[in-house]
Image 1 (cartoon, rainbow, N blue to C red):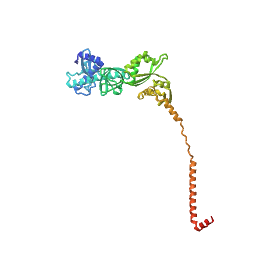
Image 2: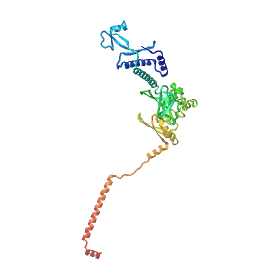
Image 3: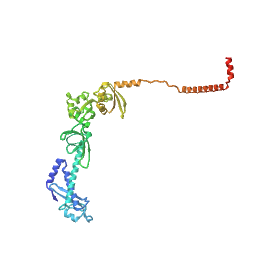
Length: 412
């Protein structure tokens, strides 16, 4: 047996406090390292009956070989005679198993290096599994971190035991991420790698707005007010649809708070991002009208109402058209994401022009085909008559004589 002392157990307790690696995992890693060192020292690859045992009371560790007691030894590596086994344990019998210590007096440099590698790898695996399990539970939730640095447009955020990555598409446009600042992020995904797990976080996810409302509005946390849908363009505008399960509680008023105190806190947390709180409704027409706010709506026509294509035509006053569409189509785009309906917005004058163009009829007379054919036949007959007259005139000129002409003139 090798005397280790209490220093090993103190190191195990320190690692357990700092990295969350349990003491049992560290002791198991040490025993496996001793077995690996023994194999290197003895130049054997397979040793299924070899194990290391650590005595926590004495602080000693040793390598033991488990052998079966037999009458006649055929394999000395796995079997031991009854006579030799009696020297170890007087009460042993045939077919029993005995543990024989085979700890080398001194391990070589290669064996010690092999043991070190095993311990390091086991500690690293245990740390990776702890982080992976912890953040798999946090996936889909909010957490707070500290900005470390910016690398290749990616923001590195420390969220406890590991550093998370915030890609550029998950950042708020025109937001300056200063190292050292605290930031609230949403855990998007956790990827397992050969080293530490890779955690992907977002600062532009719509769930951040939902979590902030749940923190600031007690009615939402109690289940009285329910968030039905959220549509967000981070850094610019957010639309949130709410519904009250209690008729006496106003869902929109509860989210705004007394004198707007609740909504102001959330807007301040989101760096003055505009938030539209609309009332959800099971009636699609009413829901679309609320989602188009703050623009006024004249009418809503449901064009198609199937699960795949939900089309609706919204008519607004002429002075409300630009407000309903929003800057670069932002308002109608968020309303589409919020309601799930494809919304086409037109003004009253546009609808009147389309109605006028549909009512205009262009009339024309179409000549029957039969009359055209009949006229073609008549023209052929006229041409034949003209040709016959010309031939007759030529014949008359040939038969004409000068004497007859003189007699004709005298008679005239």
